[in-house]
Image (cartoon, rainbow over all chains, first blue to last red):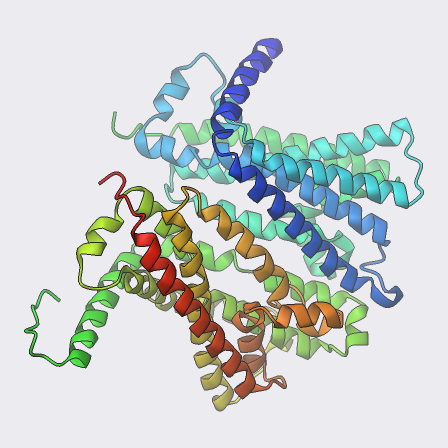
Amino acid sequence: MNLRFLSIIGVFWSKSILAEIEYRVNLIVEIFSVIGNLSGSILILSLFYSNGNNLGGWTWNASLTVLGVYTLLEGFTTCILQPNLSRIVSHIQQGTLDFILLKPFNSQLWVSFRIFSPWGLPSVVSGIILISIGIHSSNEVLSFNSFLICFLMLISSILILYSLWFVIASTSIWFVRVWNANEVLRSTLVAGRYPLSAYPDSLRRFFTFIIPIGFLTTVPAQAAMNSVSIGVILASCAFALLLLWISNRFWLFALRFYTSASS
Amino acid sequence: MGRILPSSVNSIKRYFYIFRSLFISQYALMIEYRAEIVLWALSGILPLIMLTIWKEADISKEFGFNHKWLSSYFISAFIVRQFTAVWVMVIFEKDNIEGKLSPYLLQPINPFWRYYISHIAEQFIRIPFVFIMLLLLFVLEPSFFWSPSLIRIILAIIAIFSAFTLRFLIHWFFSMLCFWTDRASSIERLLMIPYLFLSGLVAPLEAFPPVIRFVALSTPFPYILSFPSKILSGQDVNIINGYLVMFIWMLIFLLLGRVAWKFGLRKYSGMGA
């Protein structure tokens, strides 16, 4: 089953890359946009660190790692979440969701991973570079164990991000114009550019449990800095699995209300 | 609406009728999208996120930003941003590719006005939602409240409207690229970057190192956000100077836009029509 799934996704993605390569100029625009956004973000971050100050008790390198994780997640959003989940709305409006539901393939996976847009890759690459710079210059020796933990935390933050986007996107079965709600989510996630402790107490709780920005960017960065406790690791994994389960349940629940327009 | 004006009616009155009917029809169109407009308004919360960070940051004291200064500045920036939203590049690209521009070209009025007035209509719909959001904010955090003087409010409204017009003219100029390339809206992503970092949206310009502040001030971006925000928040700002620079930038982009329109239109192929 897993192998079959992977081979189908492989075909999907190679097709969608071929289609996107038609617009090569986009690559230049994306690279410029990533360079511009990163230099802007680093400039703003450096303001908080001038004259020996810091942001929420975090070192410069640790904050840089947070920014790296944020950039990586942005890239993931552009590669997969944005192109796939923005299409759910039109599948529902035009009734083409019928065809997806009829296929002998998990419909949630189909609507979530059908397309791969290569334009997020510059972000992914620069995110990884930024994380590496952060780890390297903090003189932190990353043992194999902590590398694994860091990787695990990144996976669970990607799963959390995916589930949030997916749940909001699947509400379009009831409200067709819900796409903008994902823009609201995206604009709130901008808060993940900075470590959680840079926020006041009341917001910190909000950013941990309601919009889990803490788990999205701060925890993976802490893991990279070797300063994450076992409790937080378990909490992050549990939270990711819970949200993933909710997203699946929610999709199946929402499908019951799908009325198959225009068919 | 629907009334044909004889050509003998003098031109000012004529324009008044044209703009009034354009506004009424665009308002009716936009009110259909009120749910989206609420969500757009909600997605403009970046200045409020930055406010909480700046309030907590130790560096604020060194720059002499006290809490009152920061909250009035960033909340003003939030308000200014709400009423200077521009998305003409996306719509223009769509209308250009789908050939929807063709019928607009037949009308005896430059399509510029249709887009411009539809943006203004959207702002009118936004007003109550922005007020509700501000009310909520002040109820949750009464210490954020400040009351600018009446003269400041009037000056700020004029400045916000001019800032919106300037931003619209910049975007209109770059929209003209649609005549030459298919995916001009990706230019909008690039235009967003200097707006985000140099306009004063995420950090007050006072916090920048002198060189970067100089660079920022020699672009139009601070006049789109920082200048009106400072008027509204009641801070020291050279009002005459600011209006003058804003006016010069408006003139520059107005001329650029007219030239680009003239040459671009020759490239228009009426695709899909």
